[in-house]
Amino acid sequence: MTNIGYIRVSSVDQKTDRQLDGVKLDEVFKEKASAGTMKRPVLEECMRFVRKGDILHVHSIDRLARNLGDLLSILKTLTGKGVALEFHKERLTFTGEDNPFQTLQLQIIGSVAQFERAIIRERQREGIAKAQAKGKHCGRKPTLTPEQVQEIRDKIAAGAEKKALATEYGVSRQTLYRILGG
Image (cartoon, rainbow, N blue to C red; front, side):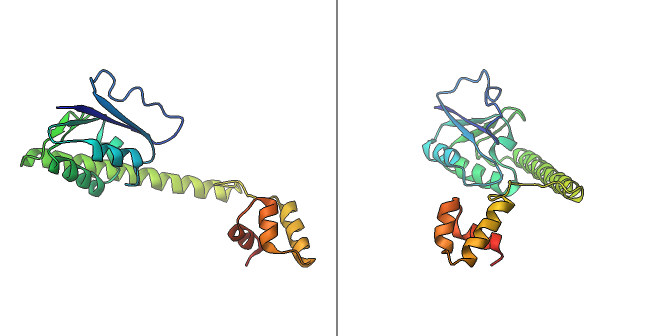
């Protein structure tokens, strides 16, 4: 039996040191990625690594998945391989055995995590809308300044090739076409 840890944070400035602190682990997989996607290379590597009889330790359910569908899929894959999954914050262990109470707990907690994520997204959208209403720019800064856009327009009018201008200004052709409006 091998004790394996999966530790995940969403952003670069978050710390992983509080997760699974004090848990004796033989192998640890650490990842900095959003749980909003199943395309997480370290999680995929971890799931390939685990073997029958292993225990995968995760700090909390939201560190593994942000929606019930993904959570159940991961759980089914792991327990199908004979791997036990232990969530320390919730104090839940899933072994794949037919236990209606564990299944109910997992579905309730997973649904709550999914609901919380939806609320966060809604608040984020509301905040962006309020900021935009106040005239604030949200999102990434423009790639080119208004002066650079005018320079490009002038050069195109003088016969310059768009592909060469994209290279010169360090943008993709798609970005150049979007900025020029077609």
